[in-house]
Length: 132
Image (cartoon, rainbow, N blue to C red):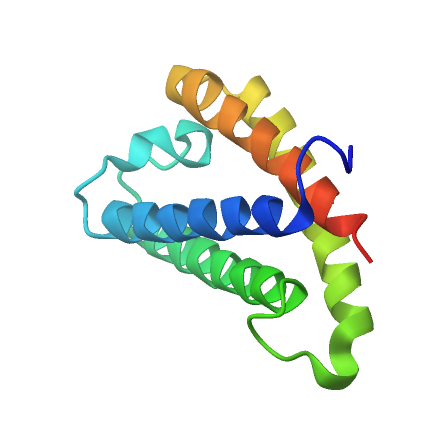
């Protein structure tokens, strides 16, 4: 896998994608993008659930961006470099499970758009995780 894509490129792809995801969730919160295409279509008019879930999504996405930026050396880790490596592996597992969830979703948008994207991001996270 190391010959297919270098770790820096994989990490930059992840950072850019997570940046777009962050913006996407902000647009869902602002009702620019309909909420029925996220969370497996389970948010149906429940304002409190939407806000709570989208804020959680923004926090997790921001944390993932920080971990990846630290792994790439854009942010200094200091004594936490071991935790950063664990964090990248957790991001890989999260993306793998998210891919399975997107494939199992009853929302065709998640099946056709998000699932292929998360497959690519899962491989990028794996590539970054195996980098020393």
